[in-house]
Length: 275
Image (cartoon, rainbow, N blue to C red; front, side, top):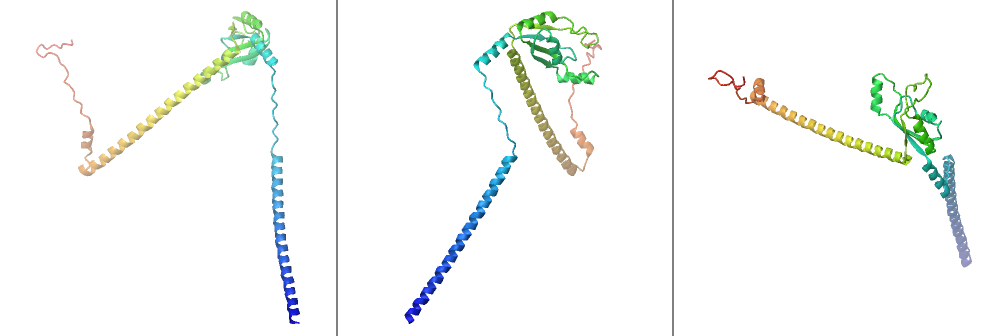
């Protein structure tokens, strides 16, 4: 009987331990599952945020790059070779690139116009003097689609009135125009780029000179301050030692220049040699 009871008690203990272990295992499994679900929820929220950010960003359209064919480039170069350029040595006031294009379009198709603006300093001086503050141009180049048309325009318009309308501001102005043989628009762009580089170089050199002058001025100011400080210390020291004799100090500071006696001529003869 005792053995049977002990065996039964041992079986019940084993069953209880197995049940407790199963409960603990189930709890750990449940915890792992809840943690995994939380992680999945966080990932889903982050993915939704990223999707919303992508939707909020503007969609950039890719520009289509058109590839030119060799035949098209050859045709364009051939057209460039056929073009002619005229030079305008003087551009009258109130004349703009659009006006130049409309006036010269009577002789042929105008492809490009370039007018050089006047210096800003001249414009400021004219405005201060009471003149007009409008933009003015000094010279210009006009490109025609055909060399023949450009040559005809240069020969016909040179030293002729710009317009025959008496009410126009350009009635008293004359064309100063000339056809440029063998001149291309690429030459003009090279000239403009070269002038821009020269202007930038001059500006850079001027800035360096200004900085050097500013640095030397600051150094001189600092040296002057040091000298003033030294003189102030000497003055205080002399005040302590000499009892503050101001006249004596000024007399000591005053420079003494040795002068030669003036030439008075020969005293025996009584006549000066310079007379």
